Image (cartoon, rainbow over all chains, first blue to last red; front, top):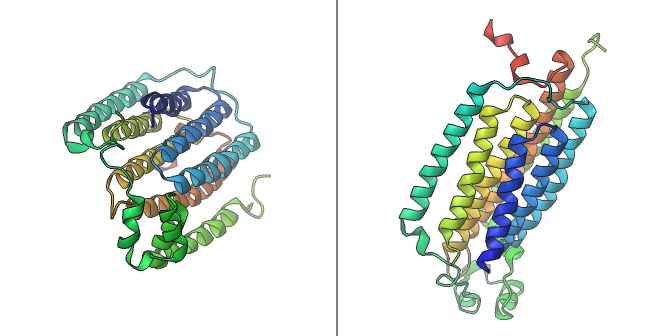
Amino acid sequence: MPPLLFYLLALITLGFGFMVVTGRNPVTCALSLAASFVGLAALFLSLDAYFIGIIQILVYAGAVMVLFLFIIMLLDIKAEEHKKLNLAPIISGIVVAVLLVVQIFAVATSTGLAGKTAQNTPLELAEAVGKLGKAALPTITNDLKAGTLPDVKLIGFTLFEQYGFHLQVVGLLLLVGTIGVVVLSKREKGGAQ
Amino acid sequence: MISLSHYLVVSGMLFALGLAGVIARRNILIVYMCLEMMLSAANLALVGFSRFHLVNGLPDYTAQSLVFFTITVAAAEVAVGLAIIVALFRSKQSVDVESVTKLQG
């Protein structure tokens, strides 16, 4: 990937992320977060993670942000313009964030991680055909021989071959979450309204 | 050249932005958005490690499976959290974190 494109996408992700943190109006924040997630999805695509990039857009920028916008409009929240800022949390937030960035910068640039580029760790699709083991299904090997990365097929194989139980647990979690939401949003009898 | 450390630094900066938002903001909805941002930042680090840790010439799909689970759990968490926020708004008529002081005694 051209370095310029990476910096542009990183700027979109971080710039809109900054707008989420500093924005006064919740609707602006929610839309900025959606834009930030689209930039992040593009970064995922640049890392050859096509499936993750697509579900980042579908789940986060689509479903989650629409839910946020629904709740913001349902609750009819006014922008907090006339409220005074209290400085202590803001200053501590900035200090903690700066310290964390400095630490992560030191760790991420000092070790051998900086030497790993897409050029010196290229994907070896043709060589991978013989080493797939149980994943050597015709649909996967044909894609690899054709020179395309069967990203979704390989994730699906990993999920259902190695993490089938975890997948069912997550399904149960979603079910419990759905029931929890219904119970939580039910109005109590004889409540205020 | 763009290396793994570039992605890790972007991921760390996004996480730090989210953390600053969680600490500094008082609107509980925006605190929630910042939490989502932190989860996504962790996902970016995972996908970066997945791409640059090749297994037989392919990305490490164990990491991407973990990202898949993270996104699923985050979606469930948002749904439940927003339901709690709605319930909170019904009783307090406010989404300010400082309006919730019942446990202070």
